[in-house]
Image (tube, helix red, strand yellow):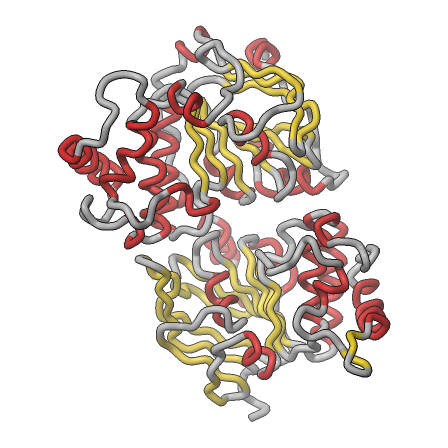
Length: 514
């Protein structure tokens, strides 16, 4: 059926935990075209990519190749149908060589042995085409985030696919690398390859795609040829993310924040950090922008007592320095909320037990043992306030990812924190939960907390924070605020694009003087 689309997705649906990731999504990609799928983080794009890669299975719906319904129930089935996927979080192995990562589970053999010479020959031209000049024998972990991203794309292209699916492939690339990738994709299209390009950036879709589809809250809301999009529709797509972020609340600490001690960091080094210094005042949300390995997560771990600093000074609002342990941090009103490693929620314990876990461990006064009655009262209050859609006696493991993240956040609210450290707090959760998490972050800042939030989603930082400090290779790359604070500027700073307007973070006295 040469006149049919290369691939059609019909009424695709997928639930992940307790929330709907995809609901009744349909789209089609014509042969030899680039079809962009645009949507905010959490809209369902990556779920679709994982289904097409054979990593996840759809709950319902159909996928057609060349007009025929196919079952993509494994990565090998995807490859059999000519589909290659470069995921946003590619399954790469940092301790293995670049070459080994390119040929995972498909190493060419000669006389029963892996042929390294053939691997080098097959990958050389492709790496050069992508502008990736690296030692293929070096461990992948020694490469930067952008280079690792390109290795993931190269691995997908080595299959010579009919359909190439790219999930947020420019997220870690600077301008020159992105331009080079776009040139490669246009060349592949000219050779007849079909591509699905999944992105949260409208500007990329408009610059590259022949067809644009929009996914919002797991549903397709628009699909048109790029040439038929009106200016009004382009503006609508570009504004999708603004609805995610609640308006700033009136701060209750505007005066107090100028009088009481702030969080100040001076010359802090350790882990990936090298001589970092900045300050943050009560009542504001300070974003920490940086790719994986930039040092932003290391900073939060040190501030919470999870990692020791080699040198430098930190002064918290209580007048003391770095906590030595997590328990000390909690007792001083310092909390860390992360999306990593299950965020500390105990899946086999009740929601009520989880919501009591921090306040019991942090207290150095009063009752120190678990009281089912007190836990139930606490849980009832928090379940309602956090809009957790489950009974407090249910297991936390029964909640969606967004519900578990609200439990992770809610258990800290009971200690009345002074400093709130957020490490990717809304990563991997549904849109509705994201909005509620963002609202809670706004409330914590308005109540007088110092809030530091690390995220790899630049649109998230630009939409929620009062100002953003950028990290690159363990050092501060600059600070943006006000009208300068947009996703494009932040990406330039964290990737080292020389076109970015970079300036050192101002001290508190400099900002007050201004």
